[in-house]
Image (cartoon, rainbow, N blue to C red):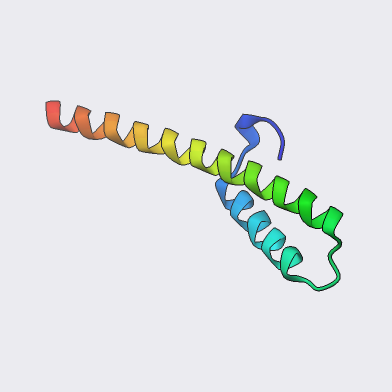
Amino acid sequence: MGSKEDFSIEDAFKRLEEISGLLSAPGTSLKDSLSLYTEGVELVKKCEKSLEGVEKEMKILTAEDDNV
């Protein structure tokens, strides 16, 4: 995933699903598992930030609607 502007939560969820499958696969080495786990944790952090941003925007819009 590229820059912050290129981040897609939908793509992140797809990748997290892939990572989950790879971590469950019996042939995945410990080294690869650690790398995949690290990638997954970073994706989850980005998703949380993205969702926090959306939540803030929704609160602002809701507050604006209440003031109209």
